[in-house]
Length: 181
Image (cartoon, rainbow, N blue to C red; front, side, top):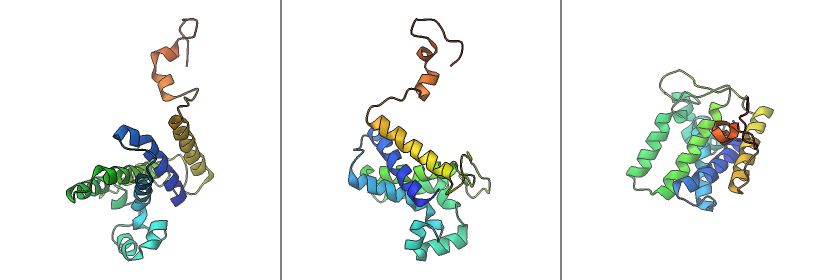
């Protein structure tokens, strides 16, 4: 996905995740860290938003591991979290960074390029819902932002995952069972 999409997905994911982590969802510092985490994996691509700003890091990384290599793996997320914890950085910093980073991986997983989650294995994992930069990317990002916004405002969508898996969803208001969802 493109940088703007990663920012939107990172913020939306943080706003959704923060209450579950016991942290404030709308704290500007945490949102900034989530945005940073959402952009950080593309440090391995010299033409990415973050890569253009730290060329001294992005060019060697691109030459050494290529794009969507180590920085797009579960190993990178674990390493980043462990390093930050080891350095004594608190949850208020680590959690938004890691949530943003994971949002980046989840977003790229939905593109046709996929991810090498098990790096150094060359196997790519993908749920190819769109191509990077395509109108499909915009639809996915806007849907996520809409869903998170509605959830944050307490609006329950007419159809949700809970509706599909809840036994009560299979019963009509008059108490008779539905034949199909």
